[in-house]
Length: 259
Length: 259
Image 1: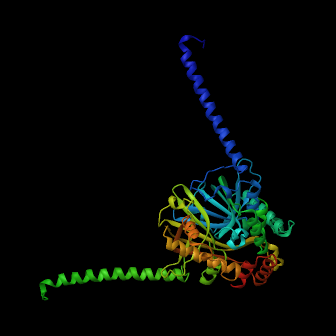
Image 2: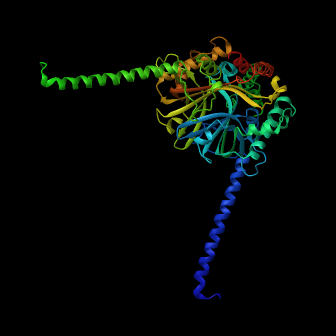
């Protein structure tokens, strides 16, 4: 088609449509990459709006290594769903799937006898909570009480992951999940990889896999809180640390040192 | 009115109405009392229907004293609500209100800056979760592994209380709640009632109470789970107890002994 005055409007329109299509695709790609980057680096800098766990600015936990430390040390997650019959919460160990490249993905499994997978649908919203040690903090632990008044509080760390769940009966996924979970926790307990899925006959393992349902949760929003006396004076922080350490709250005390 | 043949139907009808009204009221009173009794004595003998936490028969926890032990030793509850904007979970210490005579009632408070009380309405459904210590259980801990095969699992105890929430700004309620909470945890920490609300000036306490919102949760359904290797052989149970004790899981090991 030769360029003539009469078909300029058609050309302009076609160009405009092409540019718009390209722009939309690009926007989608950038948004996806940015989203994935944000999650991977715990950079969801949400503003507390009342629609999440209450986290004042000074208790906000954005350090990826600290979030990983909480999840890995306290892996028994609380999985909360909202079925048509109300809340259902279950407790199960979940792992961050390190082989997933795009998003933060949690993997685990439930018993087949747990009909959770019938109560909700694939892709439904879920909330996963990991929580570390917690302790009552007495106002008597603050040396600054000589000069000013205080009230009691509670220290803890919590990671809330909002995402979408998928259930899977696929043998390959189940085997991989069970293998990873076992490897991590056996190593944690024995400092070496002691019991593993090859310790049992494959026929037995196969019958066991038949009794579970795999779970995959793709995380879309991450909110974490480290309530560790950050808002206190230096001498108070030091003494809270000492008191916690003395009382056996090793993890919580160490979390204070890592701030 | 004299009883004559002609007004017998009217009399019968009036009697019938009166009896029905009485019957309905009585039914209501009995149901309420029964409900309250069931809750107080942890006798909600629900059958697992997939609409609750998954609890196989042998892990069901119905002992009131054990449920109280879990709540009192691990009082930092997870309070889960479903707002119009999705799940909101918060972590806060909750106490069973011993002065409430009719139902199981939990009391506590949130910061006024936590707009949870704006996100949901009074009387909305909530889920409260208390969880005690938890630990990975290695198949290597079962002496019976010489004769039969095993897989890893996780032991823990959890109490789920479903109920309805009320928020309160009433000073008297707030003061009572703060007083009770402090008394319980100060005693727990120091074996004596050390810091109390009279330790600070009433003006300061008043300004503090101004910063919180009281919470009252009337419990309508209670589900508790003690996953403590009950389904294992005697020698396996004994060794799991020993391993947990050695690894410092004091509470969990003691829970096994209390079975």
